[in-house]
Length: 213
Image 1: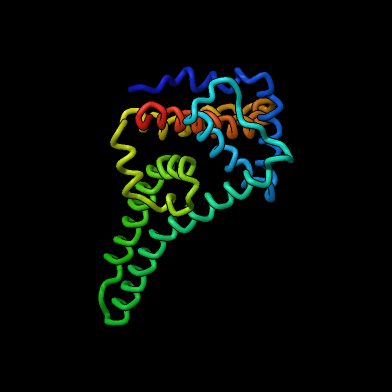
Image 2: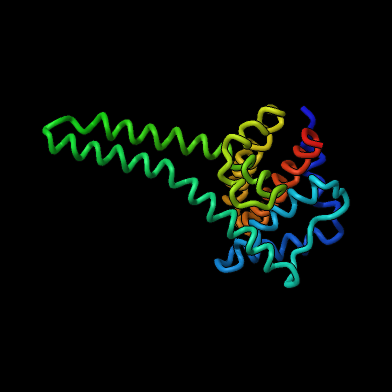
C-alpha cells in the first residue's frame, strides 16, 4: 500500500485558512442551491492533490463557486443516471412478476430476484463511485462517470489502497454518528461530513499520484 492515511487526514489542517474554508463549504452543503458546489469542491481537491499540491486546500469563494457548482451538478446528474440501472432492472423483473400473476404463475421468484439484483448492482456501483469520481476529476469528461470498465481497471492498480479509500467514509460516518448523540457534538456533524469528503478527495488524488504518475 502506498497511501499514508495519517498524512491524508492531517493535510487539511495544514492550510492556514482550513477553518474558514470548512465553514464556508459546510454552510453551502446544508443549503440546497449551493450544495453542488461542495461536490465540485471535492473534485477540485482530487485534481489538486493529483497534480502535486501539498500546501493548501483549493479556494472556495464567490470567484469560483460557479465552476465548482457546474462540476458538482454534472457529477450528481451522471451518477443519478448510473443509479437508474438497477432501478430499470427491478422494473423489468417486477413487470415479469406482474405477467406471472396474469398467467396464474408465482410472482415471488421475480420479486425476490428483483430485490437481489437491486442490492447487488447498487453495491457494485457504490464501490465504483470513488474510482468514477477520480476519472471525472482528471479528465473533466462527464462520460467518464459512466466508464465502468476504466474505473475497474484503475482499481486493479492498487486494490488495497482503494479499499482504504472506500472504507474511510464508512468509518468516518460511524464516528459522526457517535458524535451526533451529544448535544455539542451534533453541531459538528455537518463539518465532519464535509471534512470526510475533503479527506477522501485528498486520498483519491494521492492514489492517482501513486499509481498513474
